[in-house]
Image (cartoon, rainbow, N blue to C red; front, top):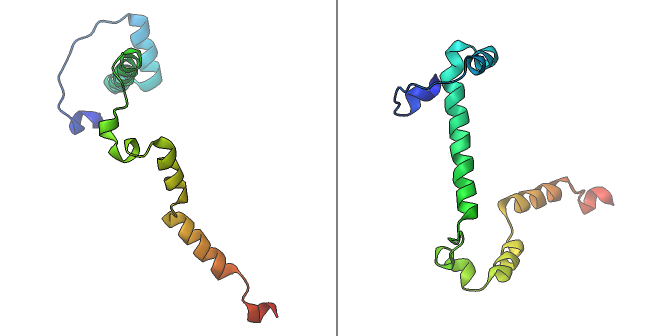
Amino acid sequence: MEWAYAMSTVRTHIVMPAKLAKEIDELVGPRGRSAFLVENAEREVKRRRLLALLESDEPIWRDEDHPDIAEHGAAAWVHNLRRERSARQERLEQLAEEDAPSEVEAG
């Protein structure tokens, strides 16, 4: 019950069919039932919130939350982003230079 120590908890009483409790116990053992139920309840809460957000008429994207993109437009932002050299690109170029044979070695 690692999750029980990571967050505030409350003891609750739920009623479920005996067959379902038996199936859960077969999967995770009787001592793992609470963790199993918490994990699945959290997943379902997240799924339902996402569905409610997607079904809402409220806009998900607000220009005021992204002034760097709203100012010049998304296409310009993506263009500039693609032109920037990332640290990974610089490291790959450095490694390629180190692996390339020098003119002295080649000649």
